[in-house]
Length: 148
Image (cartoon, rainbow, N blue to C red; front, side, top):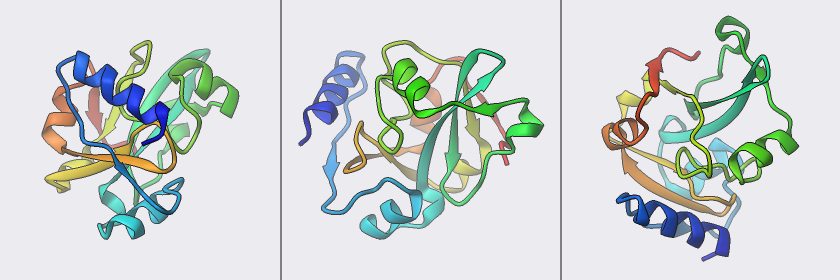
């Protein structure tokens, strides 16, 4: 397991949220690649995307088969340097939780279609599965809405 994924797993375990990290042989940098590697629907892949509302970073958790309606939500995409600065992770490996600082979070309501979803565990090669309801409950203050 990559040290970044191990640190994330340790951080989440310390917060009472243990995960089992799975290392993929192929990159899971995109939802399509991750779904193919895991043998699941693309929608089951949680895309953890950082946007900006003005200068305020906002994390959006979006189903892999959907796109964020950034303009409708008043958001603009953060660049790679900002993503790393606010989450501690690079694009393609940003997990949905476990960042150094908690970010305002919007969760795609369409994720509720699935009992279990998969998310990045800190790198493009590490992922973890989680029950959708558990993920939503683990992010206090998150807003669940149609992000598409």
